[in-house]
Image (cartoon, rainbow, N blue to C red; front, side, top):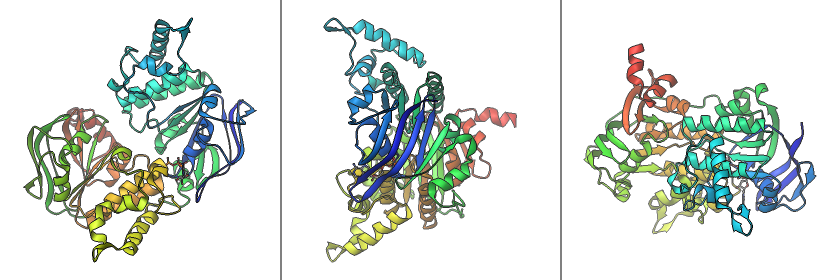
Length: 500
Ligand SMILES: Nc1ncnc2c1ncn2[C@@H]1O[C@H](COP(=O)(O)OP(=O)(O)OP(=O)(O)O)[C@@H](O)[C@H]1O
C-alpha cells in the first residue's frame, strides 16, 4: 500500500534535550497508526514536524512520496495534512460554518458564497451524524461536538492525513463511539491517521499499527493484533510494572469531609463522606456533575442548599482561599489553564504550595527546595534536563506531572483529584497511585474523580457513582466491578439489583 507520509532519519534538538533521535516511520493510506510513549517521549514534536510548526535538524519528511524541502503550517495543510489537537483551535465566537471555512472561504465571483458554504457545512455535519444548524456559534457547543467540528473542517479540506492528538480525553462514551465510527468511515476512504493516546484499551479497538517511542527514540513498530497489552506497557516504560495499582488498604479513621444534602448548579441533593486514610472514588459519565461538585467543595462555585463540613466544621462557601486554609486542595481537571504558571519554571511551580516550609531565617532554603523538587522529578520521571526549565516548554503530560507534584507536596487534610492521570503515561501513573496511597497512610483523605474505570476500581476503598447530578450508587471496593459501576452511571442500578 502507498505511503502517505514517511519520516526518514528525523532528528530534532531543543536546548538540553534530544527530542527526536533518528526516527524512521511511515503512514499508509487507510491506516490508523498509533503513537504511544511516556510523557516527553517526542510524539507531539514528531507531529509538529509533519504540520510544519517545527523544523527537523536532520532527516527528511516525505508526503505522498515527495520530499518536503521547506515545510510550514500552510504548506503542510495544502499538502493534505489535517491536525486535530487536544486544545481545540476553533474560534468560539464564530459559527460552525465560519470556523469550517476560515481562511478557505468558497467564493461566487468576488463575494463569499454564503449559501454554498452553509450547504456544504450541512453536508459535512450530516456525514458526521450531527444534527445541528451550521450557523450555531461554536461556544454554544459541548467539547465533543467541537471536536467533531474540527473533524468536519479537516474533511472540508479533503485532508489525506489526519493527526488526532488524544482525541477522546474529554469525550463521553457515546461521543467516543461516534468518533470511532467516523474514523472507520475515513479509513475506508483511504485517509491515513496518526493517533496519539495514553488510553491503552482503546488503541486495540481503533488502531492498525502502533509505534512505541521512548526518550526521543523509536522502540519499535508493531501490528496491534500481534502485541499484547502487558508487552506494550513494558516497552513504553522500559521496565516491568508489577502492579499498576499499588494499594495497601487500611482501616479508615475519622470523617474528614462530609457533604450533606447539597444542591447547586449541576448537582442535586448530594450526600457523601470521605474519611482519613481512605480513597473515595467518584465515578460517572462525563457531564454527570462530578467536577461541579468538586468546585463547590473547594469554594470556586457556590451551592444553594445543604452543608459542606471539614472535620465537623462548616467550610465557608464561595471561597477557595478559605477552603485551602482549612486544608482542602483541588487538583483541577483542566490543569493547563488552572494549575500551572507557564512562564515560571518547574521548581517555582512545584513549591508554591509549600513555600512557607522552605523558609529558613527569612530566606528560602534553596538546598532544601532543590532536594524536595528533585525527589518528585525522579519519582514521577519528569522529563526535563533541569528543574529550571520553563513550564511552558514541557510536553503536555509533563506539565500535568508538575501540577500533581505541587499538590502531592502540600500538607492537606483532603485532596480532591479530578481525573488525576488523564494524559499521563503508564509508568508515571503507577507512581502517582503509589504517592496517593502514601498520602492516605499519612492520614489524609482523598476524593478521586475519575472516568477511568480500572483506576477507580483499583484505587478506591469506596466508590460513589453519579448520574445527572445525583449520587446513584455507593459501593464498597469488594463488591464493585466494572459492570455494576456502569449500571449506576447510566442510572440503571435499581434494575441491576432486581436482576440479581
Ligand atoms: N519548544 C520547545 N522548547 C524546548 N523543549 C521542548 C519544546 N517542545 C518540546 N520540547 C521538549 O521535547 C521533548 C519531547 O516533547 P513532546 O511534546 O514531543 O512529548 P510527547 O511525547 O508529545 O509527550 P506528552 O505525552 O506529554 O504529550 C520534551 O522533553 C519537551 O520538554
